[in-house]
Image 1 (cartoon, chains in turn orange, cyan):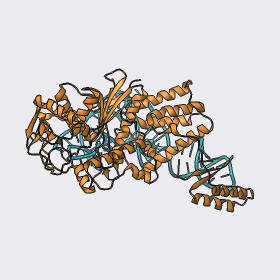
Image 2 (cartoon, protein in one colour):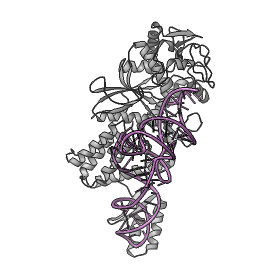
Image 3 (cartoon, helix red, strand yellow):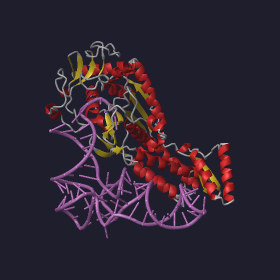
Length: 470
RNA sequence: GGUGCCAUACCCAAGCGGUAAGGGAACGGUCUGCAAAACCGUGAUGCAUCGGUUCGAAUCCGAUUGGCACCUCCA
């Protein structure tokens, strides 16, 4: 079955055709590790994980490269503003290396919590300075650079296709002037960008390397070009990121990469929309921000968040609220409970044969392969859970099949096994006795007691069932 | 100033020219001593508004209104 993806380059839905027959080269822009990732950042990583799973689900081997940006980025693509890493280091009294290492670990933890499949290569910018320097050298010998104010700049005049990804043309970009943004006066064009800094105004810059242009550090676009080419070759299949990367970061990556190699670099550009909060854009710089650990501390499972994200299409803005997260949790737990019922009834994984089961599998594949229509795929899951014309084994098998893409850890669901504390068991027994005596007042009182202790007691025809309050 | 996106029931949300998926909430019912859970059932004659194209429009085109994002550190 064909996989269709919306390609930002060209702005249309396209059938995915990999360069190699059964292997896909995928590069996704990773985090800048100067702080925790907020759940908006994580939405993008989840969408990329879904894409990867869709490819794997279709039996592609995926070579996935993700960068860790552990070099300080300036708050501007010119030589202005603060360096976030340096700022954070200064605030916390740690070295930038310690900061980078700490938040890299935090990111990996979040990734594991969210059941993101590990990248084939997770590479740090600071480990690839040599590759970046070599790429800049190639650009320099191709006449794409100039030195000004001590820094090496990329000259967009030398790359006529500049701005194509963002639907902007070079002449417009050169003439358009935004009044609200100041421009680095060393630049020939306001959209030129730094490849290598030597003349930073930041005296306390801790990360510095020798280069042909002097001791300094790389600009903030070159790492993705250098590392993706190192691991995936000078042309590869898919490059992902958040939509904000389109006009500057990815535009500049394309300029550098294609100017250096003189050929097309990436075939499919896939971008995820933003997660918004009640007020609009989610931001790290507003001070307080929503992290996965915050959600966990409020009692949510990371899978609740993952399921929430699956409720919207990756190309649509999604508004976060705890109300919606609660709904996602409720729904997910209801699905988990149904899986537990299936397991309780002895369901096991089998080979699908019935026409109904196969058509459900097919329906699911059509959803996920059609530009990752996850909300619709979830609807197929509900349909499957309700189906009364397939066996329990088929139902369970389908759920696991779907979960290859959902990644909601349905494969880890087990039969409910709960140790009932003896004091609770005594209360249950007392209540059974009270009910037998038709002393319902007492029975209700005992049930309240059990509820207060953090459990939920339900009467069923088979007797009372205890579960933990969520 | 430039580039995009969006508007579907109380809420979230799919829909890509053939007569409005799905989930939650709500309501009714079955079950229950009562609850809870579960299960069954009910719900937009209409998709911001106004025009147009078409045999046919939520879907295409134009205008209007309202909202959002990106181009500034952030996915």
